[in-house]
Structures are given as structure tokens and as C-alpha cells.
Image 1: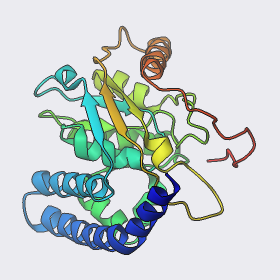
Image 2: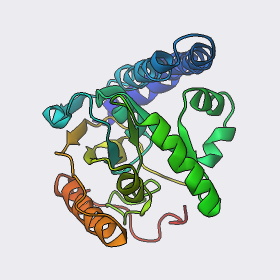
Image 3: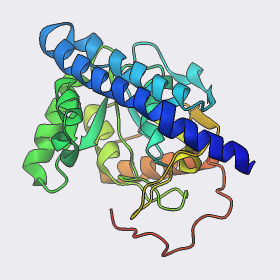
Length: 260
């Protein structure tokens, strides 16, 4: 077992990392160029999908998806997955099988090359300190995007978990579904925490572990307003948590800085 881990580490450093770096740069450039000069709808989604599949396949990680029958053709959703780690993005982007836009933190807009490609792809940036005016602009942008079967993906926890457990949900995605009259699609991610957990203070390498994506039946909010949002939030939290596997020997509380 130790020998396999050492070999996998050598493979990551000497083979996987250079390949994935080149793919990331090419995909970022292709997305920016394609969305600017070609078919923005196609180039905003498929290069990122290829990039995500490549990330997981090159790193030899097995993926199992269940529940695709719960995706209704032509229906737009507010997709709400739990947030276990960095590989959640690759798992959702590469294997969900639904054209969507990400809802991202405003800080990601300033990442070199990646931020520009996300902006070109029409992803929705959220300024969490922007106040009601910025929220209204974000909702207007989302309303323009969520049509013809295009969905939006929002992590309701707001940030990655520190210990593998499901965190409390924030109101944002439920408010979005309420105001845009859209169903919510709960998605449970398993394995991403084991592959690359959230850490602080040192470089962390990928660990081999199977990944699982469970797509639950959509939740159609009943009623409108804060009370209906809270009820839907509780329902979604319970559904996502029901398929979440318990993390064996999670890090002790206080091991990591829990500040986002």
C-alpha cells in the first residue's frame, strides 16, 4: 500500500501535473477566445467539461454517477451540491451532464487567466459584501442566463468543509430559486474530501479515492417568501445529507482554521 502511494505521488509530479497544466492553459485560452469570437454558448461549457474530465481521468480517479434520470430535459435548475473539496468542480462540470453556469465568489474574477475565462463564459460572480444593489444585479444576470434549459450551480454551504461534514446552508441559492420560480436540484458528492481536502499552511497532494455523484429528485418550492425558503433549505439539507457517507476519523476540531 505504501509503495502504491509513493508511485502515485511520483506519477502526479512527473506525469500528471505537466499534462494538466498544459490542458488548463489551453482550455482557459480556448474558452476566452471562443466565447469572444465564436459560439459563446458552446465554448462557455464544453472546454470546461473536457478540462474537468481530463483532470479526473489523468489522475486515474474512478467516478460513479447515479440519478441522471432525475434531470428533466429542457428544465432549468438551481443546482445545489455539497462542497467537500476542490475536486467537486471537476466532478460536477465533467459528469453531471447538464449545461450550466457557475455562481462564483467575486474574488475568483481576479485569478490570472482563469478569472478571465470564467468571465468570458458568462459565469455569475457574487460580491458577498456588495449589499442589496449588487444582489439585485446578480439576480437580473441570473434571470437572463437561466433559460432554454441552462442551469446554475451554487454551493449552498458557501465554502468547502474543513472536516467532511455537511455545513449549514446559506440563504442565497434558495432566495434565487424563490425569486426566479425555479426548482432546486440537490446533488450529493462523496469522495472529494478524501481526494483533496481543504487544508491550510502546506502543499497537499491528491490521494486516490473513488468519487460518487448522486443526483436527487428536484425540489419544487411550495409558496414564496422567507418561510418557504427556510423550509426548502431544511429539506435540501436533509436530502443531501442522507446520501453523504460518514468520514472515518475526521480531523479533530481546531486542526484547521474554520474561517472562510
